[in-house]
Image (cartoon, rainbow, N blue to C red):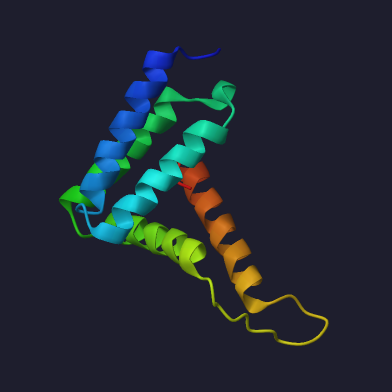
Length: 127
């Protein structure tokens, strides 16, 4: 079922507000939150929209804002990875050997897999 535009706008605003509170409005992290949300809402299929997943994610972000526990560390690390992906102009890649993929690509694939499993187990929409 295709959600109406007001539902999507309310979901975006709730996620953005909770995300800003989770990173305590810190300068590089708030831009990472904004950019991630814009990309997700502009380029995702509207048929995949799940209000339950949005509600769970908002609750996760609110918990990250209230406590400096595991939730806060996860959100902080997501923002830092997004920041350094965007701003790594002169990043050097460690190459293990001629035949093997760079270490950074392997680490990033493990990172994406971990985030995917977290989303699946907690019914979230972290990216």
